[in-house]
Amino acid sequence: MSTLVAEADRVLKTGLQSGSRKVLIADDDPVSRLVLESFLADWNHETVVATDGAQAWKVLQEEDSPSLAILDWMMPHMDGPQICRELRRRLNREYVYIILLTAKAQKQDLIDGLEAGADDYLAKPFDKSELKARLRAGARIIELQRQLLVAQEALREQATHDSLTGAFNRPAILEILQRELARREREHSSLCLAIADIDHFKAVNDIHGHQVGDVVLREVISRFRSETRRYDSIGRYGGGVSDRIAEL
Image (tube, rainbow, N blue to C red; front, side, top):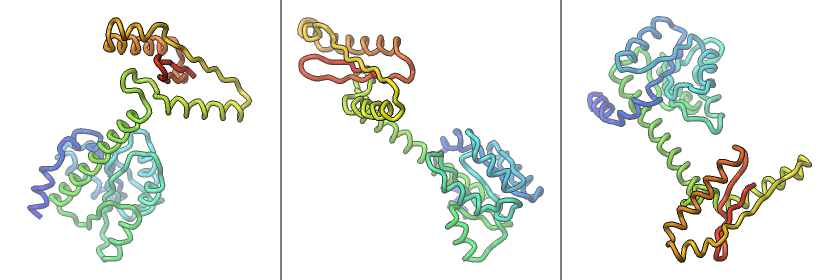
């Protein structure tokens, strides 16, 4: 156990300095809740407390809900495994790392809890150092998941936006156009499309150089943005010897 605790103290302290510091404690036993709150306060965690399963489920549906949760197995209204199953059915929400806390000690109980969607399992009466280690392991998983989401968003941005101007690139603006045309047909609404060409842009590049041309492109996009609505889309279409700006 000492090795586990030493490793836990080492991993990703940044995870404990972000949203993973907030931990949901859901337990209908007041003594168990107080013990958990005391331990987590010692480790500088912010705690959110629920006294039954329904209250815990409500907390987990809130916008700024904790990303770590300690759930008692047996609770009124909704038990721990039920909450796990409901959480795992949700799509496009931040992952919640769940530790099930229970007096059940049979192997099949462990299997049932993990299959319900729990990430970890801690039997009562629990060891303080073991709980700390498991929480830190959970914080590491949450932090890695957040880093993955950031990387995915960066890749999505690169795939759909022009690196020079930050406007949508040609494939993205054409996809948006197709989507808007389909919406116009479905809703029998109107659609406005404007294509603008920059006059004498080749001369700017030839006389002043491509770096100046890049500045011109960025400034044109900036001015388009300042004159359009939030739900309008602006893209750099490109083509031929001139660059074009497509506004939907």
